[in-house]
Image 1 (tube, one colour):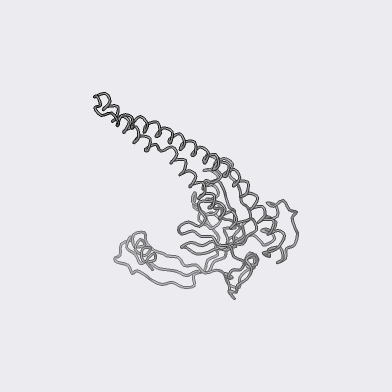
Image 2 (image 1 turned 120 degrees about the horizontal axis):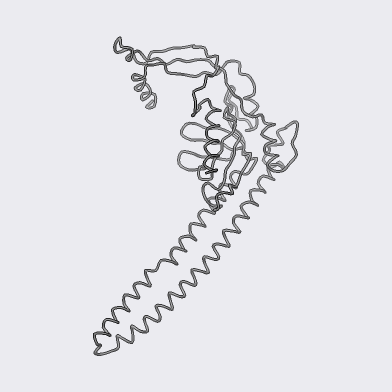
Length: 323
């Protein structure tokens, strides 16, 4: 229950940071100014419910800025047990910096601990499988011995014939025993899940700059925490780990579970540079994007919005989705 509550609160916080509250309507001082208006669907009648639909382009101010590169650096340092700094340089975020190397070392250590526990389980499974197969072999040996003796009888009685059929069915039952196969499947699943965890942990060590992207777009950020969720007993489960990523965006931080990384329509890739969100749109180190967005732009951001009656607006929304 606590995990569900934490996940929900994190999701709500992220949506509110983007101005999309799920719980209540909010009045936001965007200081919006309309700079363009275009009719996309004319009125169909004089009815209040059949008025024209318009798309407006407005200038508005950003409501929230991302963390500064100094804030991000200190978040990383705090998680790694390092002292905070009062000024930050590019060397702090360099790929071979001591901080980045410590983040990679910690990821290796964490994975090594999990791998040791999983490998112990795999070894126990291997022993259990061998024991089950040995027991199965002994059962078959005994059954075949009785079966051979019965088949050598030249004129078997009815009782011997019944026993012969029972022994044949006993062989089939032994071959159908699935306990060892179930353990073998668990072995394969453990190996696959361990590889998946290794890929994610070593892909996203604390301090690693990343690019998050899905069908809606892309964000750049830096991994600031990798947390083991202790309430989830299985360390290989999709919800056993949380990756917190400070993003160069108004959302400030995105939290992903292990099962949400590099799945359909949601990808994460390690990067060292990214394209600026504003002119001159150059490729710069990821940490610089955080500071770029602290500066007040020469012009407010542009947004487009639809102004329409509800029913006509449905068609406008459908057209927008298809475009």
